[in-house]
Image (cartoon, rainbow, N blue to C red; front, side, top):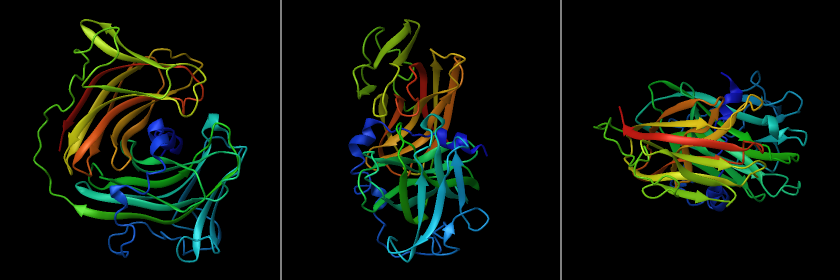
Length: 384
């Protein structure tokens, strides 16, 4: 597997100011956190050595443990993922420490990852859960950026979230998801991510779990279109976007407009150069989804200001569940050319209720590049 593509995708990173506003709540109010204090049932827990109690104290490698560890990005930075034994453990005697040094290069998205690969089944709801702690909050950054995701290996889509830690308290991060194919290999992983101005950062993790929550019947479904005005034909050229679509700005320097002509209307987003981590513009539509149903999503997008000296641009694309603060989909869709790209993915809804189909152009992950992107032909249909 190209491990750099799995993390570059996703970066989530969504990180949108939506997260900035909600990250303080993201681990306390979640639907997916309701089982945290229940007794562990060994027959439904899928992660081996979840409490890091087994194996040799010291550096964790794939040769001396059941864990897969990765250093992603440049080859010039040191990384340390270590099994520790002292009073800092959340539970038991041991835990894991992840260290990202100050010389990590954010432009190369240097980061460290630990996780395990499991084969999962469709029409089952799973919950991933982990306890995390920022161990050096006085390092000069206001936050530490961490990432907890399940990557569906065949189609490179994700479920999970990025979280900005603001203090040294132990924090529970969790999310629910479904596999979308039989015997689907899924990489369940935790990452420590870089800031634009990196500082040496240490994160402690403990009780890393993935639990089988509920078996579901295969639902009756049809292919009725759920998205309204997916081709933007009800919008007015040159005007701001109107219902059923919604726009969320975090900075007025970014803009979005209805473009094209009367026969083919589109939405274009523009993000200027040197946009910071927390600045984004998001186009979304609320949709009502049914638990246990698989949904096929499709959208067209074009990077208008692509040039040969810019290797890639990132657009966030996916489905978001506000109540659990969870994302699913490609998340960070990587553009590598100036042609029309058709993005597709399948989403299994782990809850009944309101979700948001969204696209977003975001400062985080584009590292100061200007981005001008056009969108068209959104579709969301149920599918077996």
